[in-house]
View 1 (spheres, rainbow, N blue to C red):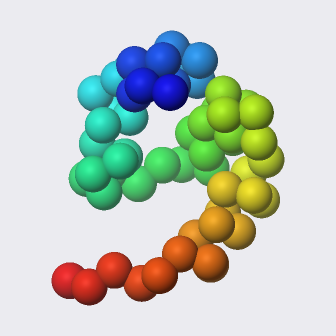
View 2 (view 1 turned 60 degrees about the vertical axis):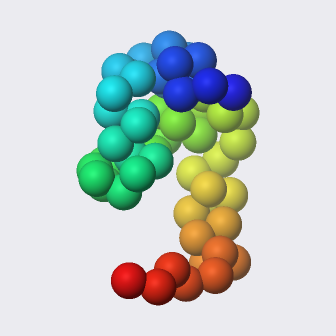
Amino acid sequence: MSQEDLAHAAGLHATYISRLERGKRAPSIVVVEQLAKALKTTMGAMLGALDEAPAEDG
C-alpha cells in the first residue's frame, strides 16, 4: 500500500503519513486507531509489533 493510499483510507494527509514513517511525527491514539482501521488490523497488533521489533541505533 502506498503512503497516498494509506492516507486516503485513514482520512489523513500523505505528507503526515510520510512524517510518521520517517519518525518526524508521533501519532496520537486517535491516529493509531485510524491507521489500524485503514490497514484492517487492530491497534493492539500494531503496538504489539513495536515490542517485537529490534531496537534502532541512534
